[in-house]
Image 1: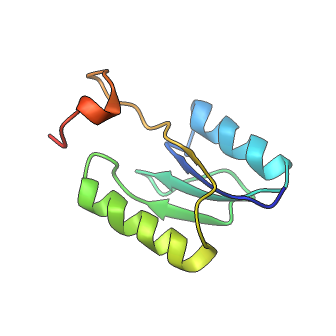
Image 2: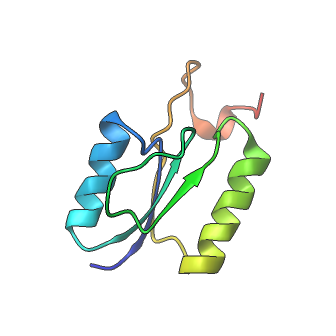
Image 3: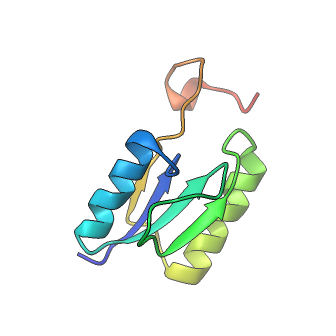
Length: 91
């Protein structure tokens, strides 16, 4: 399909499986992970801690600048205090 896909938490488990799925379907996957690891075939891997909102903002801006608009975003990185993202604070 060749879409620009961003996957957070892509280093292992569900995030890695999601990234591999998109890669297998011909999409360009930019993987975000705290470790900087990602499945083989990702277009780019970005080492970023998603608990730091300014780091995420900069990483997304860089991905857009390099690969164009993000067409699919899979926000997979986990948190321990579940809730609607719109109601959550950066803290």
